[in-house]
Amino acid sequence: MFTRQSASAIIEALSFMRVVAITGPRQSGKSTLARALAGEEALYRTLDEPDLLSFARSDPVGFLDVGERRLVIDEFQRAPGLVLPLKACVDGDTRPGRFLITGSADLSALSSLQDALTGRLVRKVLLPLSQTELTGEQPRFLDAVLLGDLPQPARDARPLEEVVAAGGYPEPVALPANFRRQWFDAYAALTAQRDVADVLAIERPDMMTALVSQLALRTSETLNISDLSGTLQVARGTVDSYISALEQLYVVRRLQPWFRNELNRLAKTPKLHFLDAGLAAGLRRYQPGAVEQRTALGPLLETFVFGELARLSTFHPDPPAIYHLRTLRGEEVDFILESHDRRIVAI
Image (cartoon, rainbow, N blue to C red; front, side, top):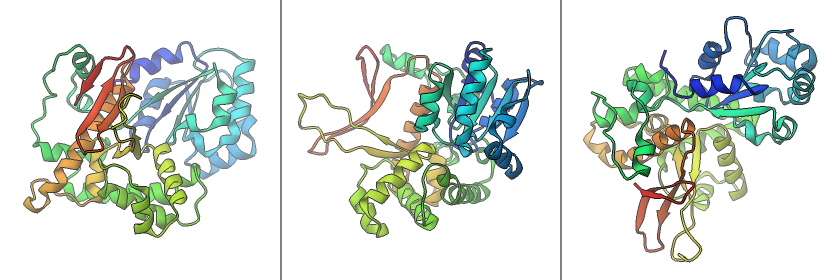
């Protein structure tokens, strides 16, 4: 088991908050980490099991009643009806650390959860493994570059192309390339055909599958919804809502442009990145080292760097905001980091 940098922050949160939520993409290691941190006396219930999901939906009060034990609820977003009973439960007994919940969707998008549990819940994001977690090194990059230093990269004997293609999901990172691609195909299909239904009602899962494939071909590019709409023969509003659903599931993220009001020449179109370059590479059928695919490495490498910055931000106590910069003339900086005190780093 890899040591996760977020573990200490989650343990600390359990000591003073009534409900702690670990959110992140499916298969990023949330369940494994939750089990490890909850303690041997905790009761674990996953809503991926049909019987437990039915129990949670039909009798939420009974589902939450486990006496003095800590309750771990995996894939909480599948039973939003638990929110109000959970609020009543933690209001009646204010002991910290009573509930540890996980979600493969961004629970902050569930307005009912935020409204009901304000002041009672803290959320921690767990993305796929960072390079520092894979190598066991300390994550010093953000602190260093914001102070004007450039730290040494993480040690990794693999060629750069292989590092990018492997990504950071704990299971496929150790698989041979052909099995890894099969894993990514199955992962994308599961996301499109089942997980999306937790956050958005869609009538055509096949269209979501096609969209994920198209986005993989466009990772690190400025987002052109009109082009996607034309390619997929779907309304612009539908494409936009589908991308928002994939953002809630931590598959992709829109990277907003950096600009200040006085710099009117800057383009204001977001870029789109996969949160894991390995998934994008798998869906693109990228083969590390293949000469005919060298042009694919550039956008995948940029997405890889974005994924690393996003991972480092999740376990940094005061992470900088991440943007991109592109002028109307096409001049570009891939990433702009801006700290709370307005320090700027261009990557």
